[in-house]
Length: 539
Image (cartoon, rainbow, N blue to C red; front, top):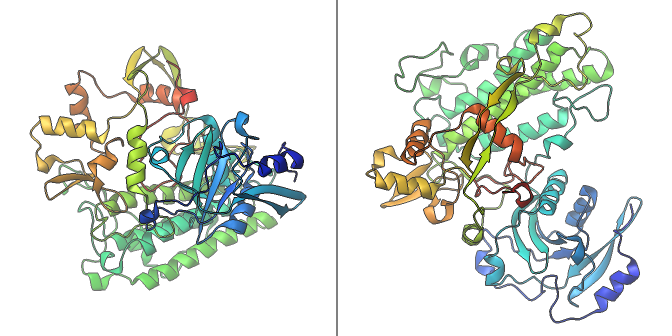
């Protein structure tokens, strides 16, 4: 591996300069020490004068220089500042990597964070999105970033319990190609989703909450810990044969969740008959042992596929896709349940630094609104769904054709095309503050608060996995509320809610996705203000 395009000589000449005003951060000690419980002010900061840093280099830098699990990394986000003069308080060091060395500058003291830095909005330029993608590929996470003068961004990094790389850079499982465009999960994909599920269910739910129902219309928390391996066990048996993993009666208890009609809870589809008394439920330890046996069964399937003992068919591939996505679905729905008790039961996610709310609030308040509040789209033709018929799985010539195929659910096939007429829509979703104004103008009925809000001592707060935060912090986030609430809001503004086809056209035109810097893949455990990359917005 070679160093960036700047030469060693130019690096040394830059390093030897001692300009009092540099385009890289000053290395004066910070005065944010009061934020240490939640703001991981790194004791070490590295400067890399290159807009692009590969994941293996990031890993080497983090493993070498991180202190107490955190590292400050300063990167230029425009080419013109790559070789500009850093302060003299940086020390030149070389990292030995496979195939060569990589030179970095190490701050001799902590970096300062003055008021101007803290009020600078987080950058949304494309190069920052590339940085975020590289961090994800390296298994790193940004706790907070602060744009500096003249085109630099200082990132506070940590290595969380798990991370999700961009989907476009995540290969599907294949026995033929090193990088498959299909969506069959690899064993590494399973390990990541298991890490996520285990952290949520075993570290964020206290023992005393296992037999509680954060939402009355759902099962108690313990049910879902048993449901996930049961669903996987049942579908594996259907796809490859074999009976239930022990204990067999778990299929009777955990097969299917409850999904009653909201307006009439007595009206509900058939679901598993669960014990009525807490003491009659299986213990957590028994469920975990069952989970481990089911996971071992899945691991054995992957081993059999790799060795050729078993043939990868579309039926098996579809089962792997379905069960993997099923765990992701339940991660989302369980978090919605648990957020109802955040601060009064549910524990914050371990291994992820508590957000520095005060600093983030100032950054979000400083983020400018789009130059226009609405955008016109259409007329256009959009596509929904894709070609994937489960009935084809058994056909000769197709049965074992899995390479690069994208599997979906039955309601996603076939692909359908729709004509979308011209329409105008807001750039951003309705924010918490906007909906609060609407709510107060219509009587401020506390019984009609959005489920994502809570009233404490007369103050409206917004729920997060870290507990409720003031409206001042969450005011720019998209409000999370019911369809009926949003419909009433839209009508009060003389508008309506978009159709699925209109929303698809909007996303096809402007959505940036995880690779483009969006807040997905557990980059954060809380919402952020809805902002497109500036390069995407052309009004």
